[in-house]
Image: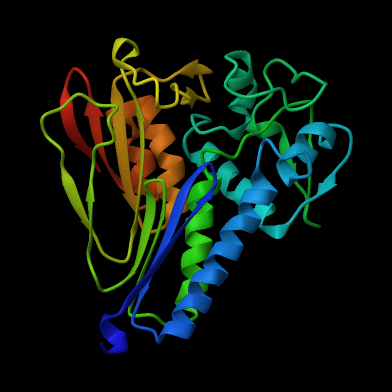
Length: 290
């Protein structure tokens, strides 16, 4: 079989889900080296940005960031820089400091012994020019709404260096495709009651999805609604499912939270990032937001 048609794929548990890396068009040794490099990068991002690991950048910031500036890995710094960008463009609907609300509902453990200050938000995170970050008052961050998309993008960039014909990285539905081949993605995950399951075709782009079942229909095997509107600090309405298509996965991942919170009103934010969304509401059915 010629190299151009051979496909290699591996899957590992990372980022709180299963991550698969698929590559095509390389000789076997090069393909395996490329996949290994991608998984090493994803594992590093998992370690740096884990809310639960005590030595992660996120945990160190939650413990120390309000007392002193903390030097973090450039990848953590970049994710927080992009998070600030999404927060600014969404008027705070996207906000990584909603961790305290997830703690209050017992979806996360406390980030440190010092409880966050009431009213603390993304605007209290200061990015210093020397790669350090400090919090202007006590707060807890959780990068679960953006780190997965960043990890997918980083894996794709490493795979790109091996010049494959096609590559795909999928982290629990946060997916990016590289190359001319088309990936078909079915938009359904068990949290939405619908007889229609749209399918999108993805070429050289990214897709990410988020959903929250109706309380009475919640599957106990699926996580509870962890989506918080950062502006109102309220849980987003149940019965919604969102898929965002964007040039990069970090954009798609972050903007699912904005569309989950604001629905059709998120159109302006999507346009600013050259993204579009398919939005399912339990009352209104499917809509496109672009």
